[in-house]
Image (cartoon, rainbow, N blue to C red; front, side, top):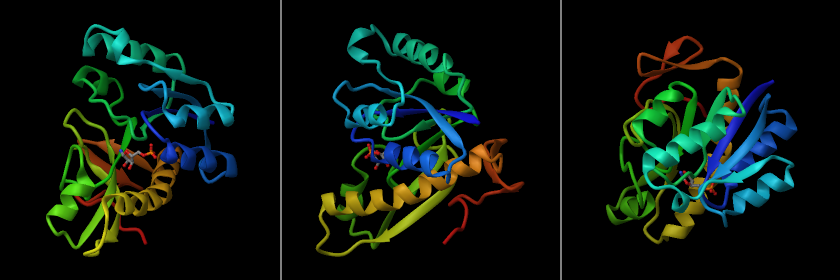
Length: 212
Ligand code: GRF
């Protein structure tokens, strides 16, 4: 069975979708640990309720980003994961850290990348009057939110939309696509080759796979 470590910072609803996927067999893998950088992250409780070891590494206890990332690397390495999944982990990871997991680390970012890397994506989409918005699962590379896209999901935006309403609609999509991509990875269907996401031997286009 493949082993997954999930990194979180908050509510952990994406973590929950992965826990559920592992439990109901739609993901053939075990989540062997959850690591949070926030001690009050609700995702820690979700992990505990599922019987998964949950740890917190608080940045306040480290002098520098390099020191924090070294501790995070050591913590994750103990579990020898096949895959590291960022699920709302709100911390920039150093290049050195990312290099350790090249082709073995996924992230979900709430925009139709390459549009809106960084924070407040929903607000930006609404302020710009976008007609659609979405979320992207991608491999993590040294460029923030810049790794190759594997799968995107879209939602329409309406003139009376609120930021919170959009966040919730996006999350519903995320809970569908993230477990799907993780299952592709653990089934050895998905790799990163020469900086491109490759599914079933086919390099994916910039917007990722076309799946209904
Ligand atoms: C998600 O919307 C994800 O796209 C972003 O952070 C949010 C995490 O939500 N990276 P949750 O903690 O999984 O509920």
